[in-house]
Length: 209
Figure (cartoon, rainbow, N blue to C red):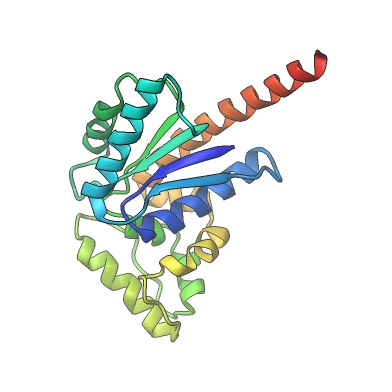
């Protein structure tokens, strides 16, 4: 499966790709995901422009080059529904599988969603609080301090350890702690199940003939 990604930065990219692999492996063990990263730098403006261009090109040609598209944008305290709606307005006529990730208030909340996972990866002694409120600067500081406390080098606020964080993350606990992650997980899993079922059906049909 080829998944197109439209993301703000490396923090989004590393966490979301790790999460997709983890969820996909639970549905179809051994399934290989091919990521087509269309944007993962430049923040919101670059992500939005790249996303609009892809949707426009797909509508003009009548098809998208990716089996599935994921667009991610921090809510920055706007809330998940408003953030998702704003992005979906750019894709009103797009019929392909599309999932919107809206970390609330920012992706750092997702890195901190499972306190045990992030503490263990950072090798810290302090258990961070469950992410709450709309202070992204505070969440970034919490991440930075955890890695400093554990003596683990991190130049990207933990993004370089996303595979380890997500890999050891208890998704049930993380989803309970952070509602925006729960919403994305449900949306992602629903679309992946549908797409994997469709791929299996098409493979069976081809074999029949």
